[in-house]
Length: 472
Image (cartoon, rainbow, N blue to C red; front, side):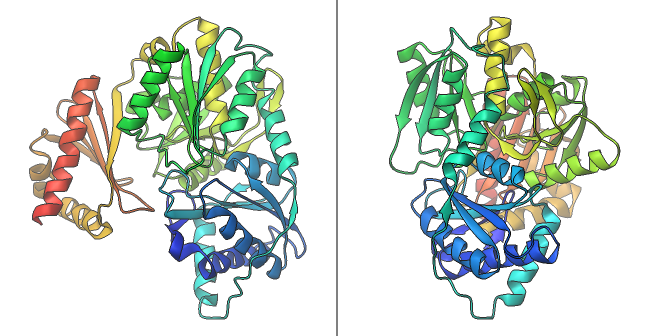
């Protein structure tokens, strides 16, 4: 078990039983030791729709109760809804989800009463887990009182004030439901603003949808639906509902970092915190200041906290996957939107649909009007972690190694080592190699002047990695 870009991740066979009880216990001890919670305080627990989540949640509920807290079960619920409800109650929370990864894997996300944990919290939880790891850990499952309806109601109320009433009237929006825990609430929220909603692709089986690297099969489904139902756009989210997926009227997915930039302009943010993988054109596309971080919501949160400590105001963040985090309260149509310092998929969806409606333009035209470099991403799945590590060591060892590796795609002009290796080539294209923080995958992010060049660069980049591992 290990912490990745957001939460603890691992194989279901490793997480079920003792491991989930161990980390839930360590989390409870951390909250109590640091004064975030007191003995007997409530702590809220939720999960996604993957088959293993209810059992793991029940194990965590039992462990949290034995550690001295009072668990409250919120059932299947979007991560931002669980986190927001717990924050409004001044309590910690724990979400059982593997987000976009396959169903044979799962994870746990942890939240303090003031929002998502940061890297310091992760280190402390890991330290406590190591200290008690050799002791007897009771992994007996338990049940708890349920406040899922109340949590959902509060989240729906939050989203009902973002836009003016019925401001999406006249739009015909598809909601790709698959197995995301946000599926019914996306329908309710979007319809509540007057849009006609068409539900698509609902599944009783868990489907791992990665909003940052949308699969060719998903893209084909989006294109077919967009044409068949004459849609103005299609929206969805990942498994736990904290990362948005949006496609335009042709079914072509919109970049998550574009959605984040639209939210920054919609909220009139002054400081925007985003990872190095977000589009390089974002910095010049608004009147905000941009702070770049490593990949992962804990790093974005640290960046927002740092900006606040420096006196910054109107602070928000987003990731390249489109998940938006708000550090500040922001004024919106219906009043004040309370801060939610964890990823949220609803706000970027609403802001983008509203902007298209307000400008009376297609989503495709809205996206192209920003003239950002064309960006795309892909990954090599089941790519051994040891191969990823060895490649990073090799490329960092010398400029000669770096130049030789990337020679088939261009000459290296500049390198960023914030997270993985982000290389700017002499034609201003960008190729960024980054091992996944929580799965045996190598991710590749690219930018180029147009879609054809970007797709070609992505294919070449993944081939370079694959061939290097094969021949090493």
